[in-house]
Length: 448
Image (tube, rainbow, N blue to C red; front, side):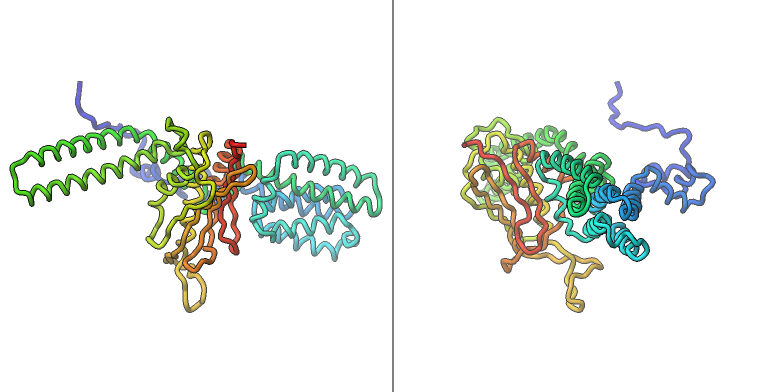
């Protein structure tokens, strides 16, 4: 049997010098895409490729539907209720420009449609579409975190109010239009959110899309499979270092030489223990393990999260503090869940202390490159409430003011929210510049 460990991959017989460079590219080249559309120029074929799956048509189709239903609502109030659902969808999908264009078109319709100025349905839809473009984005997470029974109530309220739109007249009909439109906007936001979860490309899932999130997820799974292989050579190094210490102690050499050799052996031992601790963090990350329940407390979960993320602190001006009256509370069942939620919060919190370099001439951040390293503190505060253990993550700069926050990507936020729900808790990301709290983690108490 051959001992050759090199695997030779036989090149494809159809591979040529012209096609081989395209095999390792992340995106198709113009020539590759044009080959799929041979009758079109390369540039036009590339643009058509971006629209081929239809994903980018969703927001445009929703905006067009909102406009058409809004113009129709002047004579058919029920159409405005359906248009309100489209306004809620535009709000969730964060299509500010499209919502602004629809708002402008409906505003112009007040001058060209005689019935529009006196139509409550028209005005209601106009306000909802305008709000979809200009309301703060932080409301999306708050609205869509409502309990599940609220969706049932909203559906029943929209149905009953829509029936009232057809049957009632005067002021009761106006009230029915308002109620049904608000309920429909809430339902439209929920349906758009569900659609975005099914087709994740709609939400963009962060500044750079799905690729970085997928890479980190797969990298974590690959690392988990390598832990055993990494532990084996580490054990060999540790045993060899112990044998080396024994040999050095038995050698007939001068004390100064013996001290230097033992110092090196001690350094190897300390670094080996540090590497073993890092491997332990990887191996037991998010898992309760077989440890005694007395060790699985809020404090241990937060300390493990800090140890796992300290390498992501970009400079020495950032410190992490842990305090609160709930640190000794035991979490035998949800210790791993709290650790995962704390890690997600800390990774985002550390990014608050790295920002674009400040331009003294313009008096604001420079958007043309460069980084400014801010000093400050990340404070993990664990407190007991009557029914929950509440952990807040606060970012404070060196002057005690709230540090600038960064948005957590949609994919990580959604996944961590599911972890919190599985643990009977809650994970909230707060993007408010006037307060230091960035994340709130809640876990139900099991001692009551």
